[in-house]
Length: 263
Image 1 (cartoon, rainbow, N blue to C red):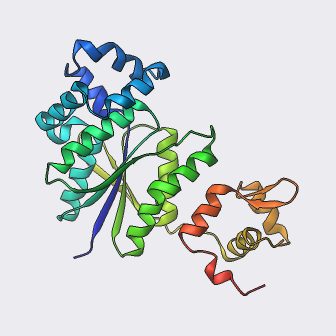
Image 2: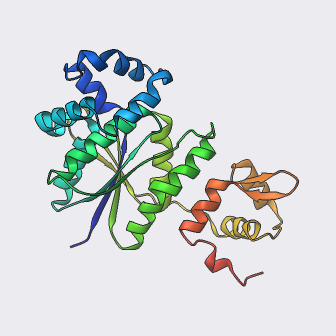
């Protein structure tokens, strides 16, 4: 039986639902309300509470009571398990906020005690540490992308679970999933899963050759260089260089090995 791996990006779904259902005690309600309104002044406090607190315990109790209806992330895991009809290996990846990290820790604790999936790890992704899409993609590839590539290379079917809403992290995770050969899973509000196809995305031959040449310190010529600069994959700054997240993708997939010895 083919192995199945699911990377699930954790947002604020769990915290929002627990707050709405009255599972957040008066001690924490104001702080959580601020966090859900993107008030970064409480971010570091919530990150510390994720290490162990009454709030964390209340969230795990909420998950135990509500089951898969507690949040989009757990609903996604149940949907993947039902779809493939076998045990799923899963990793959780929180966005870079204290409230998302808190949700991830509560979900990790609950999943470890359940039979919905085999939890093999969890990590916080520094999506916006550099303040731009490229930095976010680099961090995403270094964490979730690396795990996805490893699982795909071992012959596993890989899925990326996204919570609802069009957000920067959803766009970035979609790009990484398609570039490394994973399927995207979206679970609607009525609990029905939508599986996006695994798209055969990649660099065409001349583009890959040019990228690898630049990465190896060589200078390609021709219109393809201008195309790659216009596409945001190469940068001219006193010379040519490969954008960091593109270089990381080339490394993780060993995409430049076939180019060696050609020049």
